[in-house]
Length: 97
Image 1 (cartoon, helix red, strand yellow):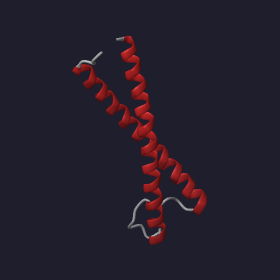
Image 2: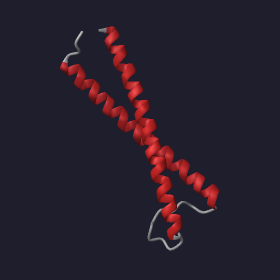
Image 3: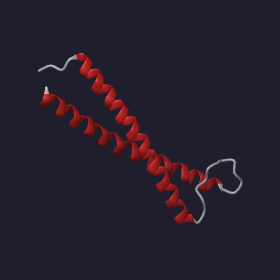
């Protein structure tokens, strides 16, 4: 059974909305977790402003690298989870049709 074009567009939109929400949520969790871990590991707040004289260049570079890796990992996990959810939703719609 073919899915009408309108339903495909709705599913694509739903998938995009879920992906955006999951990515935003994962980024927020990763940022909070990384800030907490940085504070515990170094005893200092995470560097926020590269021009801040309180942070060393090395700590800014290390934090940026770790933050980038954490953001990429969080996005990967969020995208996989969101795709799993949208696949289940689409499968449920096909069963009802």
